[in-house]
Amino acid sequence: MKLWPFKVIAGADSGKEDKPMIVVTYRGEEKIFTPEEVSSMILMKMKNIAEAFLGGSVKNAGSMLFVSSTSRQLLPWLMGLTQNLLVACCCENVLIFDLGGGTFDVSLVAIKEGEYKVKVISGDTHLGGGDFDNRMVSTLMEEFKRKYNKDMSKNPRALGRLKAATERAKRVLSSTAETRARFEKLNMDLFRNCIETVEKCLTDANMEKHDVHDVVLVGGSTRIPKVQQLLQELFVGKVLCRSINPDEAVAYGAAVQAAVLKDVSGDLDVILHNNTTIPSKKNQTRYTVKDYQTSVEFRFYEGERPVAKDNNFLGKFRIDGLPPEPKGETKTGKSNEITILNHQGRLQKEEIERMIQDAERYKAQDEDYRKMRAKNALKDDADYMW
Image (tube, rainbow, N blue to C red; front, side):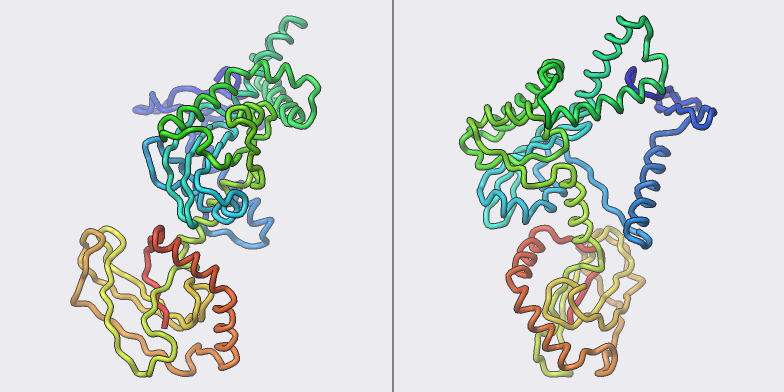
């Protein structure tokens, strides 16, 4: 907190004495915000930037929440690296070294035939590039005070400028050796903490260093040459996997995961197969996917692909008034119906032929998606293919 260019105080309102509040000076006026308000403003700014870039409105967003070290579930962002990892690594055991601006995570993942199993997750939620910056800021403040007898920590604006300058300097040091040795000396204990965490991760997984086939770097701070050097020394000269943009990996994974969960690209279950004689009748038992769900929407498509957006939408209906019960329960006594006429959104013969050709062209890709779906797909609504 001493190195932040803003103040943090206890909550001033009654009953909020233990709640941290952020104090900033804006246009000469002191303002107090809760962390939630600051997060909201950041999200609004991100939304505006995204809309300006895309030229349209953004109505949905994906958020990443890193799991605890006791969890063995697949990290959501890892799904975004699926194709990259398979191409770049093509192996069985992968160590993902994620050193970002404020947190450090190490994951040992077993990859086999496109399937993932997280063996061990470890890390430090208070270790990252910001800590390296703070070491530099503290050193420079002491040097400034010794030379000019002035304490920069008393001036939030000067402190903010110094932090920005040290971060820029740190980035430059990743590509130039000048004065790099001093930076490495200042942060060597933090770098070694990262390596010790990797060693602990291997121990917890009952694995030796030679059992790890590839080491994947994620997070901007993995660009620091000393970090890469220590990792390579630990794994006896193993070439580190740097084909993934470390700054974009998590955002890319969040986007992929959001697309998988979003209704518009939802999964489909086949009700009537191609060339089925019409009219035809078929029954299927469906289960609720939410606790105390009282309605469900059914959407109907025609096509050959496993994802809704790649097929032709025909229509939908809802069943309301379901008794509120825990998810996974069958519910009877309610019904609805839909009639799809030949002219109602149906495709022409040429369009049908094109869809069949596309299905053949993307057959391998669709099969990979079906495998992933079998393990990970959870949907709020039921989508059906006609």
